[in-house]
Image (cartoon, rainbow over all chains, first blue to last red; front, top):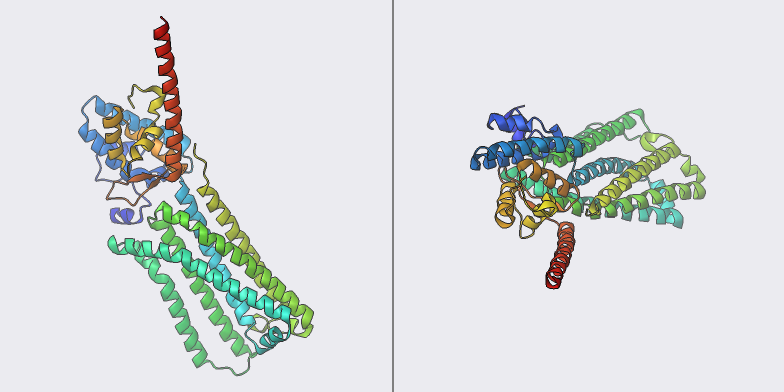
Length: 321
Length: 106
C-alpha cells in the first residue's frame, strides 16, 4: 500500500513503516496494537515528535519511556481498539445492508401486487385494502427515514471528498446513482427489445427474472458503497449519534411493514382463496411461497435493524465513569 | 508522567479540565495542563486517557487538521468533570477547615 493511499483511507495511519517519521517514533508506534495505531497513530506520532523536539535529555528519555509504557497500557486495556463512534458506525453499516434487503423484498411485494386481481381484491375487501395502505404508508415513511439518515452523512462525505480530493470516497459515492441509473436503463432496453404479450410465457419470465437479478445486483452495489463510505469517511461523532433517531423510526416502520405484509397475506387467503393460491407470485410462481419468502426476509431484516439500533442507542447511554 | 498532585493529577481529569474551555489537540492539551497545573503529561499517558475518555463518550474527536486531531468535551464529559470537581472541592474544604480548627486548638 502506498503512503498516499494510507493517508486517504486512514486505515493504516501510524503504521510503523511511515518513513517520514524519525526512527524512534516508528519504533515506539510499532509497539502499539495495529487497531490502536490505525485510530491514533498519526496524531500520536505528531505529538511525540513535537514533544521530543521541545525536550532535552533526560526529559526526552522520560517521554519515550512514557510512550513505551502507553503501548503496554494500549495492549492491556484496548483489546478491540474500537471507540463509541466506531461501534455506532458499525451499527449504521449493518442497517444500510438491511435496508438493501428490505428494498429488494419491498420491490418483490410491489411487483407481486401490481396485477389487477390484487387491486380489485384491495377495493373489495376492507382488510386487504387497509393492510396494503398501512404497508405502503409505512414503507414511504421508512424511505423518508432512510433519506433523513443518509443525506447528512452523504453531505458530510461529499464535502470531505471534494475538499480533500479523496478518490477512495468519490468512487463509492458515484456507485449508487450509477447503479440505479444503469439498472433502469438496462431494464428499459430489455423491456423494449424483448416484448412478450403473454405474462406467463417462459420468455417473459426470463426477462423479468433478469431485470430482478440486475436490480438485486444494483442494490447490493449500493449497500457495498454505503459500507465502504462509512468505513473510510471521517464522520463526526455528533453526526453518527444523530443517526440513532432515523434508525429508530426505520425500525418501527420495518416492523409495521412486516406486520402489514403478514396481515395482507392472511386477509387475501381468507377473502379470496383462489387468488391466494394462484400463480401470481414472483416470476409466475405460486403466490404462497413468494409471499412467505417476502415475509421471512422482512422479519429477518427488521430484527437485524432493531438489534443494530438498540446497540447504537446503548452507545449513547454509555455511563460516565 | 511527572506530577506532584497525587491522585488529583488523574490524567483523565486533567484532559477533561483542559477541554472544558474548548477543543484542543494532543499537544495543546499537554501545553495547557503544564501551564495551568504544572503537570507534564507524557504522550503515552495522554493517549491512554484520551482513549478511555473517548470510549466512555466523555470526549469526542473532531475532524483532523493535518496530523493533529482536536478533541472536545461532550455533555456527559462536562457532567463528569463537574461531579468530580465538586467532590474534590468538598474534600479540599473539609481538609482545610479541620486543619484550621486543629491549629486553633493548639
